[in-house]
Amino acid sequence: MPVFNSAISYWFVANGRRFIVVAKSSAYWGALYAGFFLPYGTPSQYPYPLFIGANTSRGDNYQSSDLDIAGSAFWRNDGEYGSYSAAILQPSGGWVGTNRFDTSYTGRAWPWAMSQETRRNSVGRYDMGNLTQLPNGASPLLPAILYDCGTSRPFNVWGELQGVFAVPGFGVAAGDTVTVAGKVHLVVQAATSTNAARFAAIQLN
Image (cartoon, rainbow, N blue to C red; front, side, top):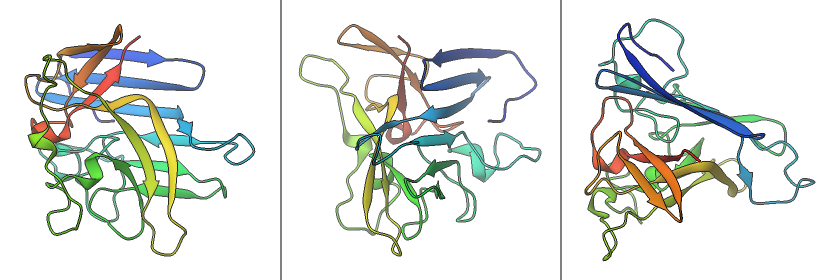
């Protein structure tokens, strides 16, 4: 997770299963998730549901405008096919990268991976930018669901990132908070992107 040489605001969220870090440096938002997610299976079926992700998998020097991180976060990736912003440990013990562009060989995070801006020529796409608030003015939160789209493996839906949600960008901006069922969530943008289809909400309590 790159950060830059300026004043940084940061948030740490942790429990016994995973930790999340969000850091804001000027107009850039960094975010990372490390630890277990909530698997769709029993402990015997999925004994070690591990997810490690941030804004990029590269470790060299960066500028905030570089493609790999300009619109990337652990829930979506703007990098090249060979660049993953996150990885999932499968039940088999092998790792699989998550990558928003590669539709054939990697894990993905719903709903961002199926939005119209990422899959313009694919059946079943929708425009997350058109999602709006509920009639009562509240912002709906959609679970971050991890799934496998590898053509050489059986299709799998692995589980959900704990405390991570997609939130419509209508009526909110990065740094705002959204409260649902008494729980406060921080609205986070993907790096420097203010595209409403790329927002996430991180549960703070």
